[in-house]
Image (cartoon, rainbow, N blue to C red; front, side, top):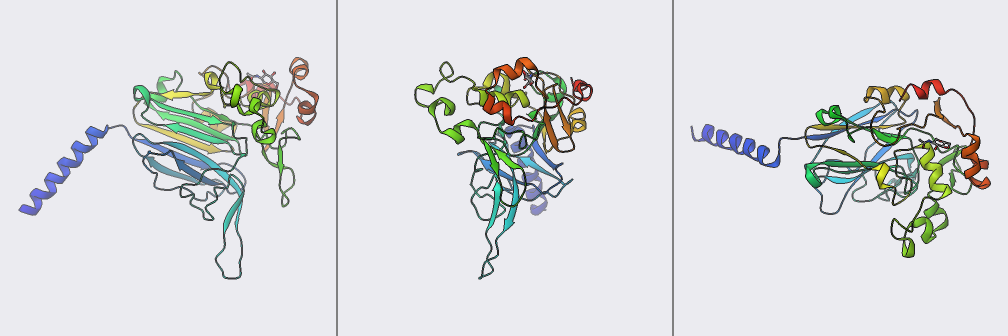
Amino acid sequence: MARAHLALVSFVAALAAASIIGAASKSFTVTNNCEHTVWPGILSSAGSAAMDTTGFALAPGESRAMSVPSGWSGRLWGRTLCSTSTSADGTGRFACVTGDCGSGRQDCAGGGAAPPATLAEFTMDGSGGMDFYDVSLVDGYNLPMLVAPQGSAAAAGGSCVPTGCMVDLNGACPADLRVASTTTTGGVACKSACEAFGSAQYCCNGEYGNPSTCKPSAYSQFFKNACPRAYSYAYDDATSTFTCAGGDTTYAITFCPSTTSVKAAGGAQGGGLPLMNATMIYLGGDQVVVGSATAAARVPPSVLHEVLIAVVSLALAGALY
Ligand SMILES: *[C@@H]1O[C@H](CO)[C@@H](O)[C@H](O)[C@H]1NC(C)=O
């Protein structure tokens, strides 16, 4: 009897706690649509509740769902070309060519992504009870990534729309930003101009540490042209931050999204800028950047030279609008 009563009391207490915390539940569904394994890494912001995992492997085609604690803030990214070194004592160290978090293990355990890495950034239940999210190339780029909210807030539209960078920029990366690997051909990542050159102007610090003095550069414009909704430099907020009203929301996070996954995610409507540049198209993993003569004139030859340009078809990309 007493036991049954206790069970009832704790059940009611759990219900009450759930309603105090808020009924809204948030979750991530992380999917690897790449043809290679991706090792997602997760870093919670200081003071935020922790996620159940800070790093794991996702084979091609694999998905993993996880709940996100109320009020969580932090970032998620993909690590590539990871392996465990073989050492004499048999205790291998896990390390990745891109996005490595320095833990020596699959779980990042508080380590952040070594740039360059494409980052998905979240602040759940923030100002006004809204979720804030973005995909950032401010620390450079290593993988195409899509963040697509699903649920009632997403159905309402507004700025609760998919964001990300659909394009594989590793091949098109300007030579002075490109990161190559000794073990694979072609580029494996693309640095930000801040990382490549370290100047205050590109890093938006010092006298350039505010939005009126730190302006887009030809390099940040390269990222912005390819991925109009992603952050291309530190003060790119106006076109790069997205919000969903409180409620049960699942954020589908996809590495190497296909154009069909964008359509499944509710299309590319809404937001200030298109999700995909109409002059770009995904071609079996190789992204082709398409430029017009006007666009070409604005980009310095050093950047332009390395941008692989070819018109393929506007029809498919056009269908995304
Ligand atoms: C798409 O890319 C072209 C060429 O890089 C650029 O001129 C144009 O502004 C881009 N469009 C958007 C919406 O970013």
